[in-house]
Amino acid sequence: MKNQNVNFPMLLVVIIIGTGLYKDFDFATLTFKRPYLDIVYGISLTAGLYFLFKGKKENE
Image 1 (cartoon, one colour):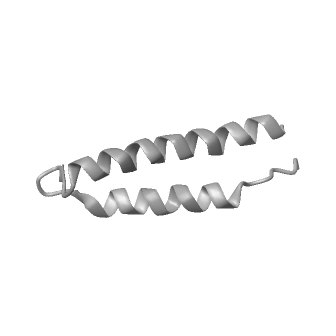
Image 2: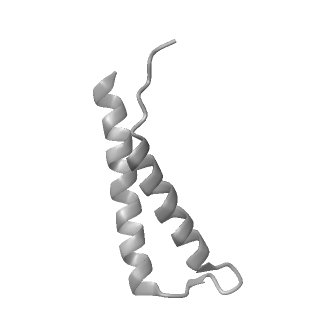
């Protein structure tokens, strides 16, 4: 089994931003409570996921 290092701080950031984005989404109306802030959350989540997975490929 290969040793896979996980970037825990980035994983923590992605989890926190993802849960914040999930909590702001209203499933009944399919809208966000605070659309402008949620755009920032979405960009941050995308960037966090990019850096999280980019770091794994460099270690292989």
